[in-house]
Amino acid sequence: MSGDSLGEMFRVTSFGESHGKCVGVVVEGCPAGLKISEQMVQEELDRRRAVQTIYSTPRMEEDKVEIVSGVFNGFTTGAPICMIVWNREFDSKPYDSIRFTPRPGHADYTAYMKYGGFNDYRGGGRFSGRITIGFVMAGAVAKKILSILDIEVIAYTVEIAGIRAKVKDILEVKENVRKSVVGCPDLEASNMMIEAISSAKEDGDSVGGVIECVALNVPVGLGEPVFKTLEGELARAFYAIPGVKGVEFGAGFDVAKMRGSENNDQYILKGGHVVTRTNNCGGVLGGISNGMPIVCRVAVKPPSSISREQDTVDLARMEETKLKVVGRHDACIVPRALPVVESMMAIVLVDNAIKAGIIPRVLRG
Figure 1 (cartoon, one colour):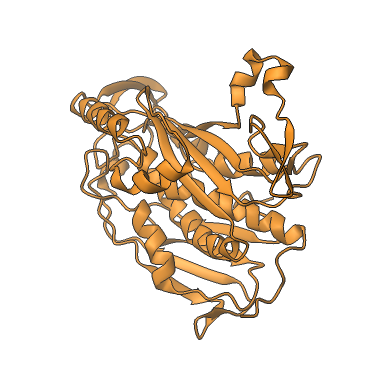
Figure 2 (cartoon, helix red, strand yellow):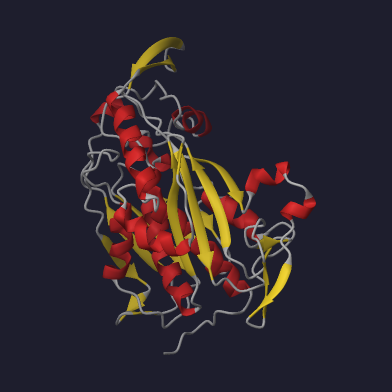
């Protein structure tokens, strides 16, 4: 069974490789009548693109979206939506010389063993961060659907290289996140993060970090216990993002340090609605959204491609050898992953909202 699709009612299927002809996505289950344009999708893709900053790869792809099906006269038709981006600015030569010497930290070895060496090894192939272009394109559609329900999804950087941001509230996030090169609403911490990335890059190294993602105005009742809980589906989506190694919701692992009286989110009435004083559960109880903001954090590892010499094995000769990765690579992928994390959350929320019956098959003005 293929692992290239996510969702049931709102189903997203990813295709393409890093150095193949294109990368793209097919979105099934999108309601008819949704106003969609290539410009709208492009705005999200532009957030993900490499830019000339200290943390980005010099590979400067245009990443121009083409919608090839499912949209007519500016509106979705109810048919599958296919969107592609052509790969143009890539150099595969460096990868030919390391075909049989797996790069530490990458999926080179596991992919080689699983597919008998027939996998596309250029630029990481199917396991490259470039496949997230498809996630973002599908996420743009999902965000548009969520806007009808007034649901807003926002991701921002809360940690890079061990430097932790102090985030006061969501208003501060909205005001400051676009002012920061690394997408951190704490502008003082943002400057220190930039310095840490620069230092690592000068050392031929890389750094990781943590992204926090919040969904606002989510209704009560999303999620399908017991094996398709909302947290479970979100975590599965986040782990599809290359480089993600940890996911937590609400207070996360800190709940292990609390007493029940500290961790329990007590109920109160606010404006005639049931809410909780705190949100240690991160907006999900019993695998079902409780109406509070959904809050999750995603841990992103340091990029594996670094210019330092490392140990590996020549699989063709079965001999230990040394490897120094060459090419164009990110020193930190956290900032570029922000729209990807948002997209994955949006996709899962739309899928569950359709299951819950709060999104119709046809949208009418």
